[in-house]
Length: 334
Picture 1: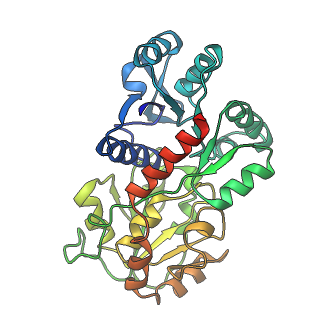
Picture 2 (picture 1 turned 90 degrees about the vertical axis):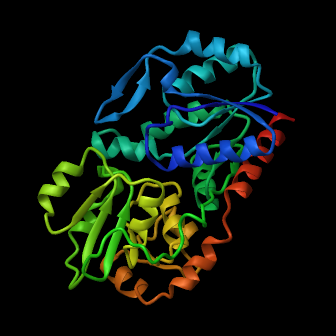
Picture 3 (picture 1 turned 180 degrees about the vertical axis):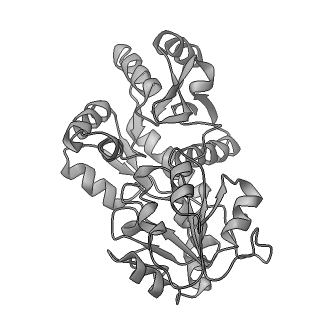
């Protein structure tokens, strides 16, 4: 199958969306499919406001149309609602080409966290973008129900995977810190709600934050007792997971949280709020504790055996994730 993947999120960005798309692409290539990734690196770009590390394509419509025309894909997937996603949507509608979309990021909540914009406005824009899609792919049953309640149609599930060979219990931690080590991995930005974790008055141990983002200088100054390790990749990232005893996920806006699977694969129990994402990934599986009192969730989760967390993570594979993505493409093309 010839597939065009249009995405505003791609390397060198580091986030769950890029990780998911790149791993699915690798799996599909191994299966013999042809994938053309149309990403910002092919266009003139400007930095995203408040996120200078994210580049946005400027007026990509004409060039993007030529790329799609030349590639002549059998399936077109729009992974993001940025400039490339909107330009590809316009081209597909103009040429009567069906396409699928995915809902990775809660943009209405992200925008409302930064500006006095009601989330209802954001969801109106999202419904417009995804409304012409043959199928909207989402990571969890909880998010599927939520979007359907908000008026989205043709919503399909597309789960996630984890590299259980890379992320595993290890004896080579990157850091030797006072125990227990409470770990957060992800973008250091306001919508991740990291401060809810950092301001906790935990009696002993070390708070460890792995990642970069616009809020890093502020949080580093405000919480000097925490360890901010910056962005890590591959083996180095896996060894930072191995440095910890528990994974703390304070975000209330993530649609999934691939990092929670990476933590579980590394043998780390998870403490989080009872919100979509953690409710699907953690709740009912015995690998963590969800509570509005994050301090309480951490205390209880520390007692969970690492073997149980690892066993749950082994149920997720990137191959299964890619196969589900492919099934959605094929069924939506009929």
